[in-house]
Image (cartoon, rainbow, N blue to C red):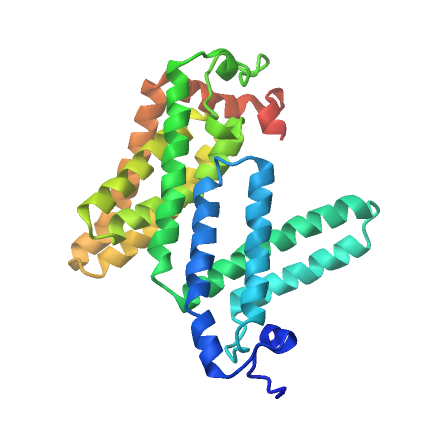
Length: 305
């Protein structure tokens, strides 16, 4: 049996390699299986319990490993992002080796490896089958939309559970904070934070009216849910993320505008956004109270954190 490096290691080890015909039968199914697995993970991210998520994340890493062993080695360069991630992984290995609590450090290292396995599978899938970009984004937005609706529905049910997130030592005592399926308003805000800019991109990029309506619903309801978490860190992150996205889109648009408009449009829009935020802070009492709590200094537990 040949030991050519072009023959996938897994097929050589199992003695199944019989030329290009076997590879042509196997390869078309790998992107479909990987895409289905990642779609399930992104959709169920806020809905599944920890055990289910752990199984899905581990399955993604194992599938990436099997995919790599079942296909010929690639001569493509490593890439800048992957190089930095490998450097970070090396630093994590070093820190684990010198940790005074090796058991806890090894547990954290395993989590890091599992997350990098998901990244590696997504990266390989999108490099080999770019059509999965929209499918994976759609699954992520659908999970976010379901989570936002569940959170907003909490405002019309029993508010006893919502009240337990009010800090009696804070000036914002009594504010009802939604948490949806994540059982913590700050966790809900952290989940929504990276998805809202992607919903904005989908709204601008997708051409189908129904898909745009779906993206708009995800962006609108997700933004309202983020606001009602009353998570100051989430608010700051959302403001910075959407502002950065808006500035990038504005710079792209300004290339096609006349010179006077190109000069005055950015400061005008920034001014309108600032005025809108100030008006909202003045008119919406819970928002105003929450913003004022940022000035409470060390008197507020969240500020200490």
